[in-house]
Image (cartoon, rainbow, N blue to C red; front, side, top):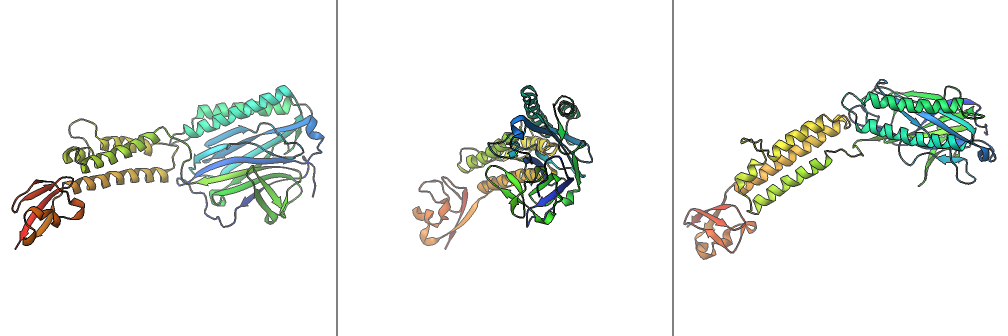
Length: 385
C-alpha cells in the first residue's frame, strides 16, 4: 500500500477512542476542531522544490454558522513527510447549537514561491484570528455575519491564489476537495478524529491513532499510515468553556465580596443587619451585592458563547453562595440557649457554654437573661436548681 499523493480514492474515516460513547449534545457541549497533522507521499526530492497548502471549511447549526480557515504551509522537519499543522485549534470551543456538522478540505501542492508562501502564512494566521473572533463574539443567534463574511472572503482569496497563481499546482484532494457530513449522534467521546484521505482503499477497523507530545497521526495495522495524502483533524467535546469571558472576573469578585461579608459579621466587625442587607435586593436605592448578582445573572444567561447547561450551572452556584451566606449571617444573629447547673452558676458560668462560644470575657450577664460572650452570639442562660 503505497499510493502516491494525488491518486486513488477519496474517503473520510471517523476514528473514535475506545470506551468513549457519549454523543455530542446541543446546548450541553462545546465542539472544537484541531488540525493535527498531514502527509504527502512524495519523493523526498519533491519537497526541495514543491510545497503544499489548503483550506478548511466548517459548518454547523444547519449551516447558519460557517468558519473558514487557511491551512498555511506544509513544512517538514528534515527527512520527514508527516507535518504538524497548527499549535492551536482551527475552531476554538464553540457552543454547539445543533444540526449536522459539515467539514470540507482542499489540499494543493505547487512549486515553491517565496512571495506566495509568505502570503499564505499571513492569510492562515489572519483566518484563524477571524474564526476565534467569531466564537468569542457570538450572540444567542450565532456568530456575527459581517465578520463571518470577512473570513469567507479571505479564504476565498487563498483558494484563488492556489488555483490561478501557484505554478505547477496539483489538486491533491481533487478539484472539489473532500467533504463529510456528520449528525451529532455520530460524534462520540471527548476526542474523536477524522482522517481525510486520498489513496489506497482502507479498512476502517484497522485504523487507530498514535499520540505523542508533538502531534497525533494515524496508524494502519499499528504502522504509521504512509499512503497517498491525508489530513488528520481532531474533534474535541467539552462541558466547560475553556476560553475567557469579560465577566469571569466580575463573578469571582462577587463570590469573594459575599464571603467577606459573612466573615465580617462573624468577626463582629460588621453589624448583622448591615451584612444581611447586602444579601437581598436593595430597598433604599443603593446597590447591594444581591443586586449585582441579578445583573450578572442576566449577563450569563444572555451570553451566546456559553452553552445553556454551563450557564444554568454557573447561575445556580452563585445563587447557592447567597443562600449559604444568608444562613451563616442568620446563625450569628440567632440566640443560643444554655442551661447552667446550680453548682456552676456565678463566675464559672463560662464552663457551661459550648466550646466554640467560650471566651474569658463576659460583656453582659443576668440571672436568667442574655449573656454575651465576646466572639459569639447572644447566649440565653437558664439557671437549673
